[in-house]
Length: 444
Image (cartoon, rainbow, N blue to C red; front, side, top):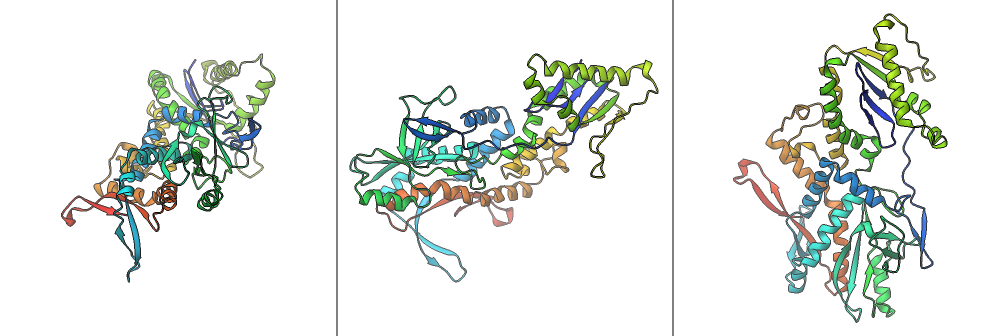
């Protein structure tokens, strides 16, 4: 018997038998976002679980590690966001063309910090966690007197959980294997509405002396409406099943080659039929039954009934739902003209690559892959203009995340007495040959 391609819930998407290729069509009954209101208690304080199992970052890391295009896409967004470093400036006004005018801020203390390991560690770590997990957690570290912020740290997001009232950040290194113990550390967290006002209030009321560190409000994927832990940008393609397709198609390509000469029929089975006859709830209530074995027996019996020579000219009758005037629930059986038809069904792995990149707002052309339906399906690399424009769009789209990552840095400078200082990115942009050079450095 052939192999079965399943989605994350164990529902078969494609089955390759000895004589038939069976696929499901339609869509599931709808995925449900993770709950963000599950609670656990540590030292009498209520904290919010990150995912129903309190291990959402661990599951995200496993998914990213197994999907090359997702891993590379996140790395690409991080690199383009980081640019070629930052410079401090002071705005002096706006000219007649509505362009900002500014001058360099040549303070050695600020310059040393922005070129230090401490800043780079925060900068790269925050970008990594923001694009991987949808959240990052900066920490402001003070001197003993509480009069100066000496550095910023970004705590590995997988170790962080937020209190229900958003006033504390719990850091524990082993949420994957259990609830926090005495090795966990709790930091007070600034108010997310106005962290600078909160910080200055603490200073004026002498509440910073002896405080080692305070957590900056968690920085999140702004597009997510979750109250505590934002969903990462690529969550939508995971729910849609494209990541399942990406991961499983190579195994089925191998199976397809082995069975290419015997594939004669393509049977399209409604998704609703699978959910109706092999429902998760039924098997949860009947642990003595094996869902995988039932799938295999069903596939084998279907092949024997439809493809056996003794059953020539037999009628195959199925009801279908036409409540909406369509053909939902209808089965389709098509004869494959040749073995390549089955392989064409599996070529959607290229579309999965593009869908994953789109979720990160990356034009596939920047990696040498054209848009779906174009040269990308045949490996075409596109023109230099395509790559240049795709890269330039990426730089423009980074503005929101860049400002988010720099918010705690600008708060630090303001708290330390550096007024009206703005941090700008240095970026290398690609230009056309008629400019006399291939690259140009900009500050934005």
